[in-house]
Image 1: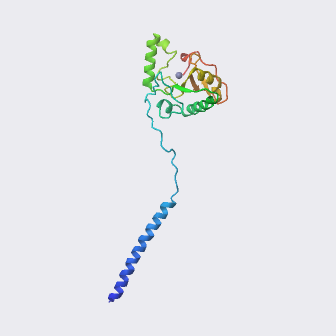
Image 2 (image 1 turned 135 degrees about the vertical axis):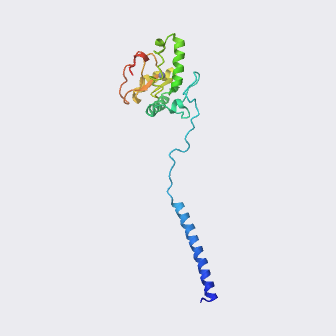
Image 3 (image 1 turned 45 degrees about the horizontal axis):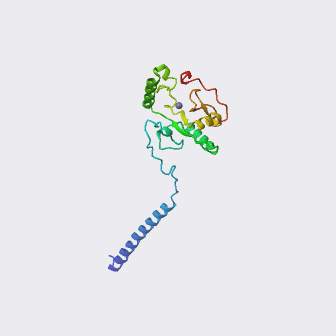
Length: 198
Ligand SMILES: [Zn+2]
């Protein structure tokens, strides 16, 4: 039989041991949380894409090549976009502002443009010299960009090769594609969009 005194001691010892365990658990947990490695976030807050989902840029508007809120810019081929952005920075040093007048387009938007061109030029054959079908358009695939204004077009015709950017069609001084390795000279532009074999 245990005396009531030894039961009391054991009871207190039990209470003390219980709290000791609690204290150890709490301190080890907080130590673990303070030593947890800091994992940097890849991107602070991704910019929300709020622009026209078909990539429409109204006639009286232009976009910055850096505007990642716009599907017309976001959906461009990343290499083309990077080349365009590099060129834009260098052009600015020459006093030339490059803006995007048309970038990536949805198939639906491309079809609307083709329909408008048929109405304007009177026939599909003539319209195709200016606007390609949704299946053929390099705007739809994200591989083409139209830039402005005229001073920027001529700056890019002269300097674009340094970034791999070339004027594709002789009748469109504003339309550029990534066509060569940076620094290589650009091929002679095709007469118009119908001359392209794709
Ligand atoms: Zn174009």
